[in-house]
Amino acid sequence: MKTFAFATGMEFAAPAVDVLAAQGTPPSLLIGYPPKLQHRSGYAPLREASEKHGIPLLETADINDGEAYERVKEMDLFVIAGWSQLVREPLLSVCPLGSIGLHPTRLPEGRGRAALPWTIIKRLTTSAVSLFFLDEGADTGDLIAQREFTISRRDDVTEVYRKVTEINIELLAKYVPLLLAGQVVARPQPPGGSWWDKRRPEDGVIDWSKPADDLYDWIRALAAPYPGAFTFVGGRKLFVHSADLIEYGGQEPPGTVLAPVWSTGVAGVLVACGSGLLVVREVQWDGGDRRDALDLLESGELAVGACLGT
Image (cartoon, rainbow, N blue to C red; front, side, top):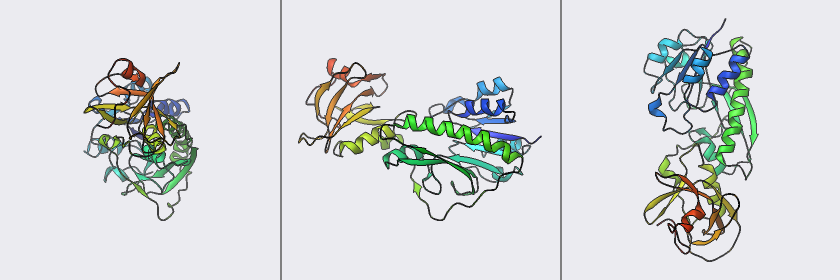
């Protein structure tokens, strides 16, 4: 019976293992991040899945340090998804059936990091999850399959992440058995493509001088499991996790808090932008708990007329 190793640091990992095990093609080895890396976006431990299905688990912060090679070399196929490092030789080609990966863009477009935030910031309405063979480049290997998904203007990155998670599991469930049976024919990626830059937590600062529709996309693109968009109030860092867009041509200085917005749901505050308005809904002081933004007005931590970003 052919075997495969599964390395991942993503939230879909445990459900994927459940599905693979249920259909009779469980991984023979799991590789995940150790608990010391749980601060990373989307971190998901594999210990419970390992114990549930009786699958050996290797936890490592460096997949290229040699330990993974010694374990994976006994396998026929290597599946890597959501790992922050590029897999290098000799690990990359140690398995006779190769190494495969998943990337949440329509390759060759959108190679690189932070694919889902960029998908929203760039206002794409459709994209795809790509399943492909890994080579020494970054997201450049031959394509096995692509599965499309849509992005609504009402979706935040949490919802897009959910859609991608479902497709990841579907692709692995369908193609891992075919790969192990040698029944997959891959094709080279089309020429050209694009590279999307890495994003750091500090890149999430909100520039209130930009149009409100840009900032609406900015905030929804950086929602959980990503670090979040943020601003400052009197030098104090304030995360903005959700907002609504209002098209309005007022003349107030960007960042000005205009009025409370009452709601039976998540209440907020109305904020002027370079053009248009945002209803800032869910916020969080750095180091604090999530709250609705109206709480800040009611508690006196924010005032109508205050200017965010200072």
